[in-house]
Image (cartoon, rainbow, N blue to C red; front, top):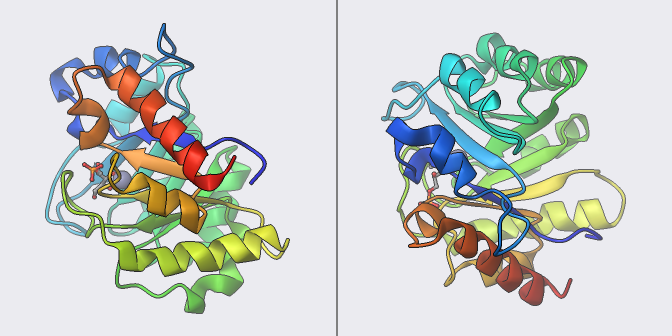
Length: 229
Ligand code: DX5
Ligand code: ZN
């Protein structure tokens, strides 16, 4: 964990009618360097009981911001759909292991298309069965709420999975960033940082704040202090 904590605001909590402005609202400015990644939640109303946006909107966002786009695909059949997000230029594309038929192949395809490959596990999905395939991935997204909606309460019990991945990364067995998503805010970010998270997704804690850019800097400072970096 040589780098400083990464903060990825989730636009799920932003105003969808003003996405370009909302991405600019967490960019670099007087309060600091801004968001490291912009987290985009793609939901298909099948894998999760909510519908958000898809590839055309991601393409529009890619043209509207310099912030690397972190696509979180909460969709069925990522074997078919994930590659399009990588080819469009997303920085990181995360698929759910519960939905993927061939997660190793997906990762290889995402990397060949020039993106980082991410694997996500829902709160009740164990990590152990997938440790072998994680060498194909660049990021592990540990869900700390049931996927589908912003503004839910953080589930601290998922931090055991973070600790496992952290240990494997620190001992050189895996080379990946550990990302956490769901309920991350000023009250919960420190325990996640202590467990070894590298990248913190925050939706309502950033876009619900009066000053989203300042909220990003505050969260990063808190994570940095708690992780001792
Ligand atoms: C939930 C999404 C999250 C969501 C987080 O399924 O994956 O990215 O935006 O929102 P908060 O930070 O409000 O829990
Ligand atoms: Zn997400």
